Image (cartoon, rainbow over all chains, first blue to last red; front, side, top):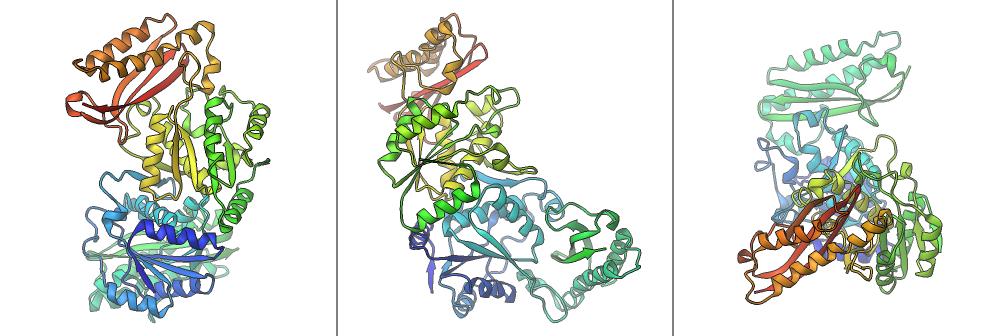
Length: 290
Length: 290
């Protein structure tokens, strides 16, 4: 396994690999790897000749009052984990190499970026789309693997790839969860004991909604289900706020306010909940066929 | 020579070519080809195994009151000219294939897009950057050739390519001119006899400025030179307005108001002039070394 820092040398390397007709798989990460990331690497490893992982805490996707500087980092541990997963190359650039002085180009994916996470994190998806496109241009992957946990990120990247004709296939892996259902996230490390215990309520609330929606004969009033989910979440003492609970079409993220207008298809149920300064997101997708 | 319409099939073809280690050269155009375009093709032809030309009048770079629908088109003639230049593939897509319903992704290059042409054509460079990136993702060229006539376009594309780490080399060809100095442009076809004759004043004004700047001992007052250029241009009866005459650093387009602050480097002198509804642009670059 090699660790690469320079944009130019990676691009030269990946151009060479592509010119030999070999397949490049890519897993972009912000490091502090957990089982969720490792599952992405295992999926990618099976489908490519060369597996690239990037580790880069991308400043442009953090808001001014967010946790960029405090975001957990541990490169030594990440490197060992990548080695175990038989990663070929880690791309580990400096921030100044990715965003040099006078950097001024951004990718804007309109419509699906203003809702859900976007409404609480105004420039987040501009930063995500921009860094993902930059990384794709550097790594030149045949495919890249993302986690379903960031469902809106997946929708934004799929839309960008389709609109800009990016020649990279997007593969999405299911969310990896702890035993009590908490979705794996680098940010879970911020939780104290009580918050960690209470955080399992997010998945419980999502599964509650799924059960209700799939129950035959149930009236499937999404407003009522949302209310019950909110009550369940707020019953945990360390929860300090619910940013949103939302039902959306999985493909274009259009809000679904009633199942009367959505009898068949993939319904994304997503939420964002605060535990003090810590903000967690989670989601599930329900196949509706009424 | 083959004519290709489908994004997917071009991308498959260019991926195949790249995987064989062959070099792809690319000349993006809006068609209605003239000697300027042909010079770009000749430059590209010498440096690649496969030469792609795109012909696409890109709607997103036209303002609502501009000449998109009237922009001259003649595919039969263009095809013959490409054939003569030994082009291998013409990419000639439909607008609905490039911008399908619900299209929503744009590339924004800030700072250098708001001045000069950008201040008169508000979303022009957003459209240019977006279509060029899309075409690059489809054609996957090793290099692309642009004309110096659109100097700000060149600066915007260079900035985008650098910021987004696009793996395509940008080559710029000198402006090709008619005998009287008028820069070749598809829009010259709009000019009537009198306007056509008067239009030669643009290059004359640019060369006047160059002479003054390069004259030893001349006070090199850019304000005065600009004033004289304006007078010279407005002396032609069919000129109805001067949108701008401007002195800028060639690399980052920062305005140069006085040669006291710019003793050495490449100085872009550019202008936009209206002849009734017809708007022409031109520029030269002067190597200053005082």
